[in-house]
Length: 219
Image (tube, rainbow, N blue to C red; front, side, top):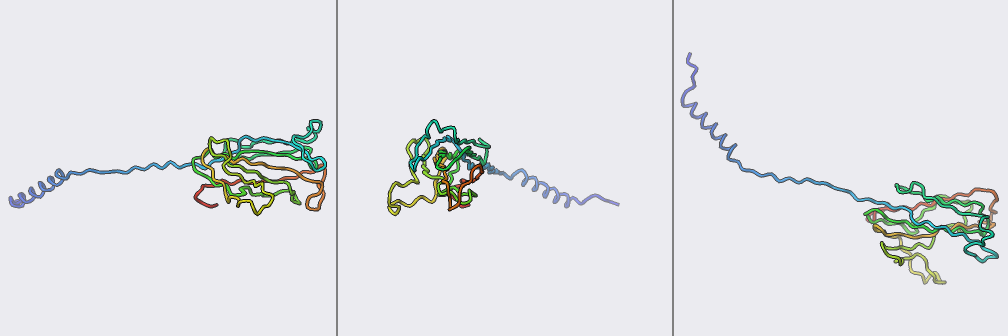
């Protein structure tokens, strides 16, 4: 039996193969590629420059600093816990506190991240505190300092005797990298708070929270 292919078929097959080779070698091309790398920013704040001042009111008149002969009767201590890491805590402890004795803690909240942050006004949420509430326990006198500046740009304290003349307080402070917010924590109680006596040899606790969040979103 003759199994050879006809010459005509072979010729057609050769033409098809050559055409395929022509397409393979005749297609010029160039590929463009997009590679993407996204490096995210950081929201980061921390406590800095914590200072303590103690005073005492004698017959209703506050004296700062307290008299030297009374200075060791009560003391106020501070410590930054988890310093240098996320979610720092400013621990404030008083020992020997008594009515009309005052502890003033001035501190800075510094933005060290590159993402601008908002801190709500008053910016501090009292999670829990003494029962009944102490009238003179609070965070006041906040001042905003821009990076590298020594003069406050914006303050929350109004000296007008008529509160209606005070400008509206900002709903938040905005901090960019290097900006700082300086505030004062006051610890003070009287013999009676909210109609109830303050007990001797007792422990009272409180906690404030400061939330800093990216400037273009709300928590």
